[in-house]
Length: 285
Image 1 (spheres, helix red, strand yellow):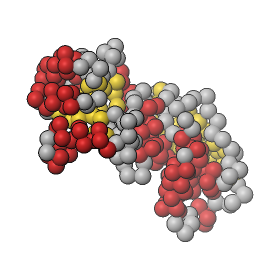
Image 2 (tube, helix red, strand yellow; image 1 turned 90 degrees about the horizontal axis):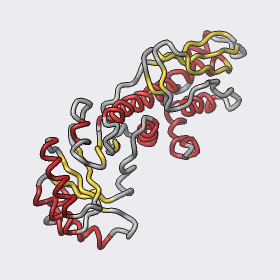
Image 3 (cartoon, rainbow, N blue to C red; image 1 turned 60 degrees about the horizontal axis):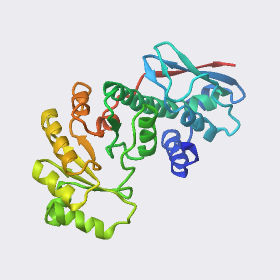
């Protein structure tokens, strides 16, 4: 998928620029001749997984449709070490200066998400489990952050509330129980929608599977508790997918993968990823 073909992404980039530029970049207008051409270099100031090259490029294209493409031998998903120049961009110097901050904010954020995701994916290599994201994203950046997760080697969970049924503790309480919630969902949603249920103990697990849940989420368990529930779930219905969730970090994520789950959802991929350090140095061309 070309994420830049998504109208929501394109519209957002225009909004991001409008927020930063306001009535105009008065510093650049006052100091830089609009006829001067420049070249900017994207420099990794630490190890990172590149993500957002096309997004950064589109920032400058919004300001000047004739801006050249980023010249690079790298692609999203490539790993680079500190000190690597992983892309250059030529254009009018005032355009490069005006778009610099928004482009950097986006590529630093996206690369940060991709880099953290890559660490989690590597932490569970060989187990058969997959790392997935959550809806704990930055408002306005969900599509870009979830794209960054896939660049890092992870998979996407729900894109939004309209994308799947996930029955959690509040739904269960308000519906009157696990069985009632699952049956109500089965009666109301389309046949193509799978139903996932969050469970916290053996009784809820059994009830969810007996009611016809397609996926169970084992929430806030220890690895040992998780392993027991996985075995119980496999005995009840080996076709039910099993997801582990709750407080996952790099120190213990593998123990959950080794417990036999299919999916491990990690909120910190998007809500706690640190923006990586990238600079954009501009000189006359």
